[in-house]
Length: 291
Image: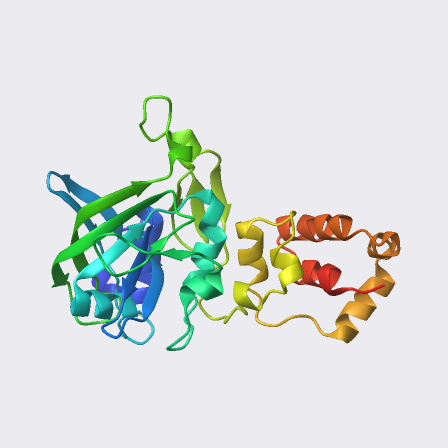
């Protein structure tokens, strides 16, 4: 057994150990609004419920390890004292991950992730329509845990309204753990699905995905692709060039056959096979290939 003094590790190394050891962790998909009414959406896995009467949730937007900067979620909660915590199930995990991309000011994470903002009842921040449970909250307190990179900021929230999709309820009106299909965070790229165990989602920390909003309509409206597929397609930094597509088609007999059949559904199904294998750029080459 190794023994570690936390003070002897870099913040990044310490964070990696802790996130891998204290897991799996539920995910708070936090929707906030700044003082000027601009929405923000970001996931946090330092999160849990701490009381049911009153109903209290706590999540922690930590200072960024790399540059000690703070996140818009914290700034917005300090300014407005309101937040919506949307739970994350498998159906939206790729879009949730894409929303964590650090887009510039004025860019909507709802738009980039292809998620639907809907009005809340008691607070100003939007809810995520695709989330199976949405919790409108008032911020009771914010406790800073430090001033250096990696330091958390405990946001203590009281739930003032709960919204639950009927599709995740059982015959008794309670939440069915199989139907809700929640996901949770571990270390690195690892997640856990309550129904199926471990899987990986590439973290968009050093990349700037094009976003779901940049995906052509014929792809977004396809009957073949789901939200997770669109999340993966939107996480590429750039689309393949015409030259790359041409070379790919010339070298791939299966793609030639699908193109010659002029069947859009079969073309999309082939692209989905590549998406499922995490060969997303290849999927894009299939989608953008022409006869």
